[in-house]
Image (cartoon, rainbow, N blue to C red; front, side, top):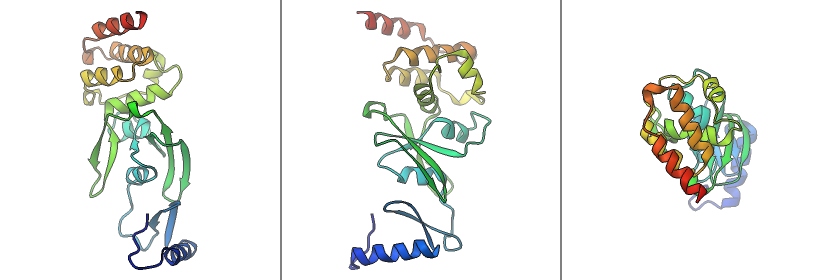
Length: 203
């Protein structure tokens, strides 16, 4: 969207095209631009850019876990969850992937300050659950150990349980059970809701 006042939109788009060609601005996608150096005063945070690529996405999976210091890896691709179409965008400001979910799974995120900027980012619990949801064979000890999760005190076990329930998937419940079994000090009482769910699934 371009707010051009009384300027003819066609003329404004033509000028934007000239600025892109001259290197003054970057075109991140149709209708979305960013100032190029040396014209920009501050580099936009990758998470802020990710939030602008589609309507209502939030950053999740490994990028969110790395942001919270919960995995040791440096993540070079910013992954967002969206109800829009899945896509991968390579821009001058980084590589961005958008992964599709149904509307019922668009929860568990909040606006977080990023040093003068802000972006919608999954909670630690939802970032882990989104990762488990999308990865095959993820409800296993081997997969969860391979993540090398750290700073586990940032996980709220009860919130993890409640958010897992909203997926209504045995895979997600088993993954939480496995996660809690390898982090016993963080273990909530899960057996009850596991039994209730499995009983309702059989009925």
